[in-house]
Image (cartoon, rainbow, N blue to C red; front, side, top):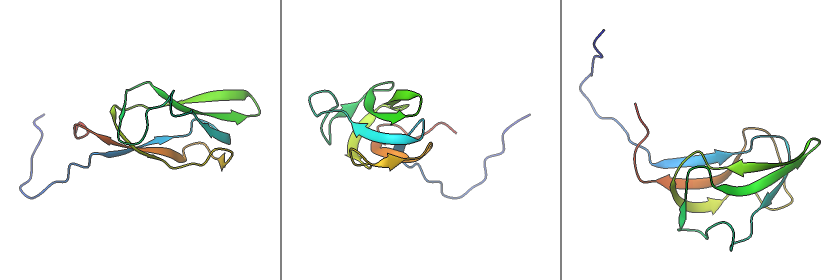
Length: 95
């Protein structure tokens, strides 16, 4: 089956969020561990932890990109799936 491409504009959004893998209390890694804003975060790199009933769970980035900011404050309660960091990737998402 052939994919049909319709004419018109499309949007390649480079912004991505790193989400919490669990519910608990967020702790950002210190700047010497996690790059500072504007630096590169690699796919799989830990940006913080979420401490919940089952212990601490690492929050790893599923993307490589420039760290634009940490969205959750250290000590803040977060829910599973809640954004905790914001990245600007270098390539648009695959379609």
